[in-house]
Length: 340
Image 1 (cartoon, rainbow, N blue to C red):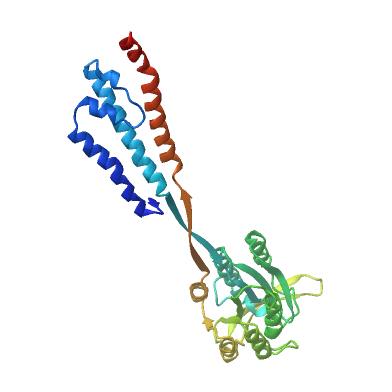
Image 2: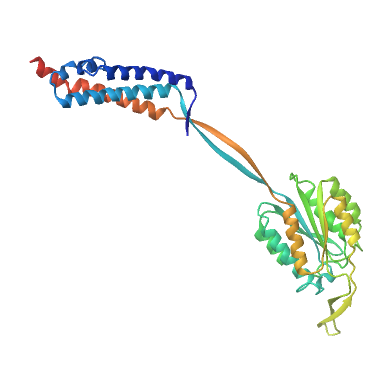
């Protein structure tokens, strides 16, 4: 919508209004011709033709319109264009996944590790505006993917996770320390670690509580998730016979989950801890974390003023020039004939 800078200049519209009122009270053609703004073509009136009268009236209306447009130009018309500038403030998230041998247990369908990989894939696909990294740990911790938005690469690294590739054990403190190292120097204001494990910390040189305190100092929240049943579970154990052939034995082993440790880790970093007893429960936990750690969308109202006086000024100029040249050229012949 068009607006004007100087609304007070609208008072100048009184001038063409006065001229119009004068014309309405002076309906004689000679008076009309006398008060044309740009010419004195009184000779045209001598023809006493209806066509001449209509032409003069048209010139008069055009000149009044041009005068109104010029007043509008003096008021400095403009159009205010508004829009909203949006940008996302994504999170930096590191998924810290336990890949110890017990993650092969089948109390989750089809197994703990396969269920964890599936929910991680779904979580990644739902976070297009975040940078996500991946750390795995057993008796040691390694980086599988740095913080990235290249989700094709990240998902390929998730698919590439295999059990029994690292030293055996559950070094939760080392896994957390590796994840913290990826986050502590980033510029993001929102940093999150998602810890998934099915055991207690039993190896490693770094205590999980020490790592949690370090995370708290860096403003990193740790969501801890315990995976598996609390009772004994079935775990495939692989061995090699004397001839080097790989054999599989299904063993029933106790659960080593430590819910108190996971809860303390989450409390220190002002996050939450969870226990996933089945695949559906694990999926719901990741969905809840996804809802808690929303990507922030910032909106900044923007406005730009664009001048709109060009077209009214051009139209007014064309009206004035056209009426002037028509009066001074087209009807010049009529004056010459009358003179003869």
